Length: 318
Image 1 (cartoon, rainbow, N blue to C red):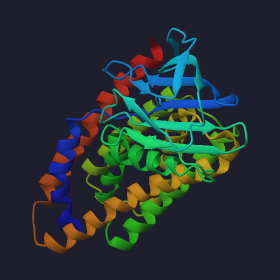
Image 2 (image 1 turned 45 degrees about the horizontal axis):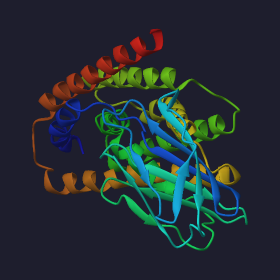
Image 3 (image 1 turned 60 degrees about the horizontal axis):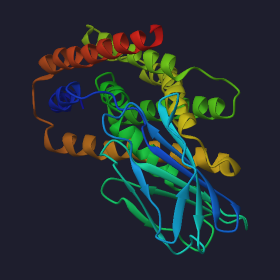
């Protein structure tokens, strides 16, 4: 196990050239107030360096009473009305102006009680609105996967834990402790029991990377109980997940399911990483660059953690 860590060094160096990616999906909400007439809310992240995306409604619909964009948190929000000649169900809707870092979550509530949740991306910007109710907000699952796999700070923390454990059994226990911890605070925060401002949570997450880097670079290579560290810091990462999810908004009538699917998506993202570890153990079990890998990885994680900590503290102060 100790010999495989060198292979993670180029991965960590690659991560060090990337910015920590916040969960940045756009959000389109349509609510049918009268037959074939909808109130429309379009939320597009203001921190994306592109022109705000635009919605292409079916040809049977006409958008009216469109407001000027308003800034709310990290989103530009536009309100409008949509009048259609017939039902939206069975028709195609698309979003232009998305990027690799910005998907769009689409929520539609019909006057007869039917509901629909869908997700479009830069690669698949179109979707057909089905005729039946979408009972479960499964789009939140893919948002969870995306947030974990594109959240470089979260991935750096998971990779960094590998340097503090000895043996696959302890690694699994450590990852499980991290999972359990962020699941607890994610749930408590979403239901309003305990909350922490997202900016503060993100700064503390960066601080966990700095501490992790110091542990990796210390002479005591292995922690006797790394799952305690993973659990404690996992609580902070849970607040980061919750803040990101809260700003997007939930399928309110399915709050529990939205939370469940988002959390399952995060876990799926973590599980997607573990086979890489197994493959590296199998293929590179004779590499002997352990001392150098510890030092370089400590610098990479610590450097990025410090950069993000300063950047996020400036955002809090300003």
